[in-house]
Length: 556
Image (tube, rainbow, N blue to C red; front, side, top):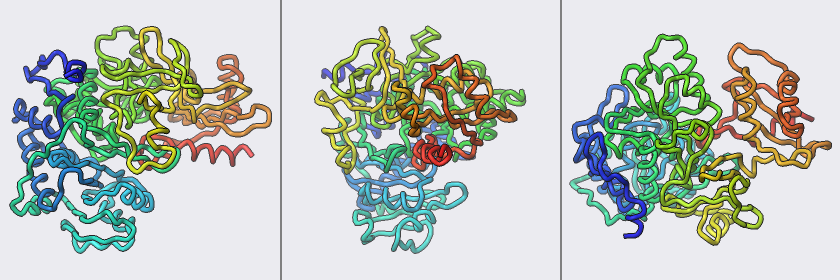
């Protein structure tokens, strides 16, 4: 009762549809879909190319898929892996797995064969569903290359009774092919029954970015996933009439929660694309009258360049999330609802959001939000654990209904006693501070701090300064390398705006007198847009260890 009183949505009725809000804090994914279908059965739920599914059709597809999984022997508590690019199939499978009380484990479609093999083995999935293609290559072929000794007899078939020495937990592989008929035929008369699932049960294992080493599988609960989707919807002001274009991958909580559940919980429609292409994105925004679209900064700049030609009507697009470096550009594009945030996989995505009632432009443009209701966030001295006051920088820690349950098969350094403090707060490794009003400001990662001239330099701070203050800088990443004079020297990798030219010394000179001496890059190297090393597990994060290795070679 106490949890429900603290977290139940208020008001309990959506003003746009009179649909009672789903009791996400005590519910499940399967229950949430059933609830919204009762109120929006004939409204569009998912659009993908020429496929359009109403909530009634979507729910029916989920039920058929759950029956098929039940026919294959899937039961509550089983781990179900999915290797499939963004597609309605992924959403159908997510809810079908939830209906059975099993756990959904999405795999990154861009993994190298070696990484995919290692991740499948580490995850302990007993059932693996594969389908679709990534960059023109069938993911079935990628799986065959990744797993030594695996033989799939034919396409669109089920391979059971596996006994792979390298993947002992894996029993069944389902090759979906182009549709889900093979899975539906597997039902053999079986009818999936709702498991006795609770909000506390594990709904997902989602692997983190692995930007420093092998990815970690975060065990996420129904309550956390649903609550994250609910509060993203609150921050965006989503209603059933909204149309959300999904560009973030479904193997990450950004795609599953920010883009997916935030809309589906409110009877809105999600439009799915295979992968980001600025021409396709802006054409869909115009044709489908997209209202909500979350883009990464580099994606936003590409779309903005097309919008500047005046050939497209994107006036329907009014809602999106922001990273501080591009807030002004989002305003220029006409967005009225721009949501600042602090999110991570271990928080079931959002831990803090800038909500609609906040009107101060200074907060909306630069803060990472206040902690969500029912979520406690504190700043502590990372060495002593002492609580710090307003405006004092330290490690960000949080606990609450959204906190993950721990890592799957954790390494020694990822055991619960290492990642949670004595109060149950997750030690994020992020650096930031809270202002007097309780707003969070992220200033960087402790592992991303550079000790230059005896001073701590936040890589994030210098990166944002370069992008915001030097007009020709399109993107910037900062790393540190050993230096005899400075201890560590600040090294900048920079992408210039299209058609612009500069020398390394031009960038350094632009910093002089405007940045403290120890923050000024001592070396500057230029990259083209396609040359950034991107994290294989998310396709949205630059691998700084690769940049650091390159810098070590270049500065010798």
